[in-house]
Length: 179
View 1 (tube, helix red, strand yellow):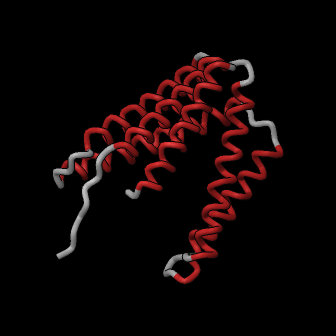
View 2: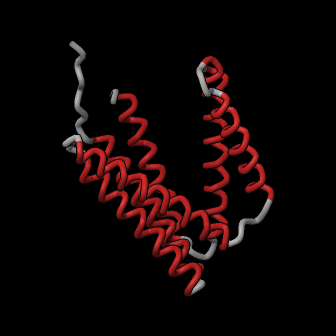
């Protein structure tokens, strides 16, 4: 990781942690803030995928997948901006994103452990934390139907993600030399 990428990851982690603290401190308007964050995230991912397609992926095998993903994410972002997102959508978003992210992190940690990589422990902790956030969102959202707990869980999840992103940026990376 270059120093520019490290600085970018640290700034991104600080920004994510800041939004997590904002959501935790304003639980009354938390669902609206969460919907705005989801909308801007989808917009950013859509634009990034379209940019990648027009700059590089159109010359690659399977590059149209990036175009399709970018258009779908951009459409979802526009749709999310035009409607008032209900708390059930936020709960489903929390469940899907954190559960799938946690499962992927755990699988990557187990693969890294097989090849005796040193970073598997942080990946495993990240995966377990994401699955716990998904379980908490399901319990407090669907069982207790508590809006404040839902916004608190999402804020804590953002804070957790921001801190882990900063830790990952500050961690030493191995340099592989080709002989």
